[in-house]
Image (cartoon, rainbow, N blue to C red; front, side, top):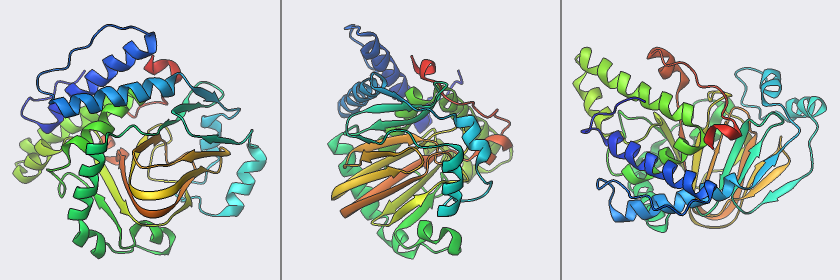
Length: 328
């Protein structure tokens, strides 16, 4: 395990993440042993972590295995494509026929034929006060959201006004609890990616100090997420797509909040639909899962992800696929 300096925002995140992991392990094992949180975790955060651990354990106990091999499917995907072309999905469908259709409403884990984890579905996993914090923070970004620019026709929907990409250099304080919850979820969902991300963060901070990059070092000190990038999307369409910048083996975490109804996430290459109400978190490889969202009302998504090129720059080995037994 990587040691995190106590003066970093990531320190509290890691303590809370271990608390969630311990609670998750007890819930899965049916152990009634009481787990005491660190004194560095305040009461509202403690309660949010307890609730998240309970939802994660419920998902783990409700696994759905598909007749699909993630590695073979990823090998068949066209590189550097956002997979928005229907004809490409049709060709994949011939190689990998869909199984039975599912509409999921309760916490679940979706597995491939070898027990690799494709997706975690965690409805009602974000505490109401953290949802309110996410909404307030998004409103505070209003001017940035209105000025967000397009970057080309191929990815135009991602960068219309209402969608911004964030990194530690421009997004430091005020969202610690939101970052903490997504990071704590990753601690359970994908332990190897979690620790690889922590290692990358610490290495990058040390590199910044050695290079005399004081501004960058300060920003990293206040960055409280194990993920090194985030996207905030407000009232934007989200057509069916895949994310070529994500790694096939990794997980992105999408957090949904807002005042909307009829929220539905479609996973078209899995024949699965998810009820996507406010307070839902979904963890999956955006590279692998072809997903899109529909809703009616005011909808906000915070998507957290890891930039593989940054991990490569820091010499952090790429994590392999998470398996069902890895998190037990």
